Structure formats: C-alpha cells, structure tokens
Image (cartoon, rainbow, N blue to C red; front, side, top):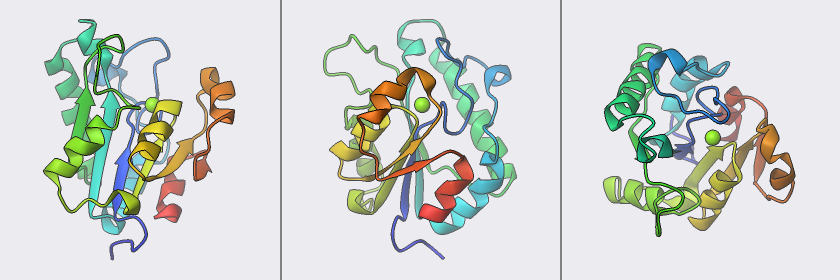
Length: 180
Ligand SMILES: [Mg+2]
C-alpha cells in the first residue's frame, strides 16, 4: 500500500543513510557504513512509497579528491545492500560541482529536485518528504514546496539548525516510516 500523504521520498545520503565522515568524503565502500536501522527500514519505505530518490552533494569529486567512478561504486554498493534486504532506490542524483561554482546544483539549490521531476514527471512536490541532516537539505525541500524532516545529530550545525523550521525532527532513520 502506497502512502496517501507522501508517496515521494527524497533522502540526503551522508548523515541519513550512512555515517558522515566529518571534514572528509566517503571515497570507497570501506568508508561507507550504514546508519543504524537503515537496511531494515528500507523494505517498509519501499512498500509505502512510489519513488525513493537520493539527492546528495558530493563536491569531493569536483575537488578531485575522488573520481566520479569511485562515487558510483559507493552508490552501487549502497543500492545493492538495500535491494538485498528488499528495499529500493529509484534514482540517485549527485551534485559533484563545487560550492564556489556559480549557479551550482548543490542543495539548497532546487536543481536536483527539478532533475528528479524531469525523470519522474508524476512526482508532486506537495506530496514529497525531504529528509536530511543539514540546513541545506531543509532549505532545498522548502524551495520545492516539500515537507521537510531534519535528522538530528549534525553537531557542527546545531546553532544553524535551531533557526530552521523543518516540519518534523527525528533522531533515527526508522522514524521516517511513521511519517509517510
Ligand atoms: Mg547530510
């Protein structure tokens, strides 16, 4: 049964699906560690949603600290592990541009949401939920008219997070299931 409220789920990657490496980039599958409860929650999310889309800022590629292929390997691993458990990811959008690039696609720019809507025209942002652990995720969701969910725990942004107005706050991934 697909959720009537939010059939379209947008997820940030680092700090939501996998542990963040503060000040570093996840460059290989060895660096990629799922957050608690993620693999068990995904099959439930798959049942409740029509589309699950990952939107991730990955300027480590733009900085040439890692290659696009390395990033793709990490994503293949993530997707395979999720599918093995009965979960699903419908699309992954990665912005590899630099924060210093003018008109870059990085969240909070709505660019990756617009790409997702081009790929899946039936996506309705007013029936979409955006989950992330950064201010940029919440602002991205707001810019597109989505409902927003702040995954708490990014300590270096705690002051910034206090100024945000997400629709929901959660402290673990499995709580997303209750919001759909
Ligand atoms: Mg994040």
